[in-house]
Length: 339
Ligand SMILES: Nc1ncnc2c1ncn2[C@@H]1O[C@H](COP(=O)(O)OP(=O)(O)O)[C@@H](O)[C@H]1O
Ligand SMILES: [Mg+2]
Image 1 (cartoon, rainbow, N blue to C red):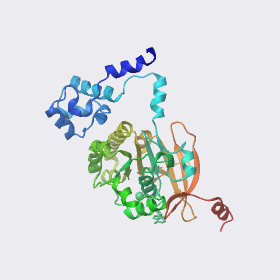
Image 2: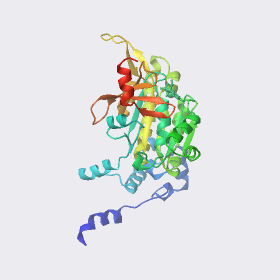
Image 3: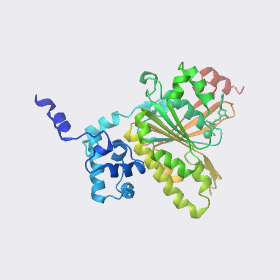
């Protein structure tokens, strides 16, 4: 049967490795050192760079071989552009709970890249994170990903009560929902980085499809104060974001970070609000959404500020006891009459 020879050849020549110690050249001692620096799975090794493996103490050549074997094992190498399309098609989408916001981002928040929500205190960033924790557990036909969550909380604002309220609203059993949320509080920026760097095994074992860092920048901002610290802060943030992207790609998961804004003097337009972390965070978050409060209580404005392939745009939504919801036509009419 000549039609399927191409596929057959691929499966014949590519070795699949389940555990890192199965990789050629990785003995028990090397495997232990790899674990010590956060590589517990073949998937995460496939996304490593040679420099990242330096602390293991193996030669550059060997590091390259190990990474290459991991990559071919999970099927990353040169591919034809038509296959790229196939890879792109494996991107899945997670509903935000608001149909208009989903539409703004082409059907939901995508896997394999980072989405950043930024805005002032109280604009609803953490509320969206809570909502996503519940939504990701929904079946595909309801906009979920049938998976679990890894939640890294840096400001101690995660509240189980909210998860229970939102689960009940969606008809999910809160007791089951909370079992699929793996939670960690990060006490410093180093701790935050450490948690993420050691999360690959947890992600794999718990079928995690959503990784949240709320907030990405709070610790970095309070620890790295002053101009002379800026370069090292940016370097650390860059490394952290790189790791998050690698995990999102390796496990086809949605990655969410939140970010605060600060006023930056602008010569021409007066003080403007800018997200913290500047270019580093901006370039590594593929999709950025700016959230704003309004004078109408629960109503918020969500603006798609940057996306690699979508136009900018704005929608309104609301934050209620039920979670993130669309604003009804009726409510919109009432507001526009100024009541
Ligand atoms: N149980 C609730 N019912 C209705 N609205 C809520 C509830 N809990 C929080 N909110 C809304 O969310 C806001 C806090 O948003 P949050 O996501 O914590 O902000 P941040 O952007 O600082 O993370 C509150 O000011 C309130 O408007
Ligand atoms: Mg918050």
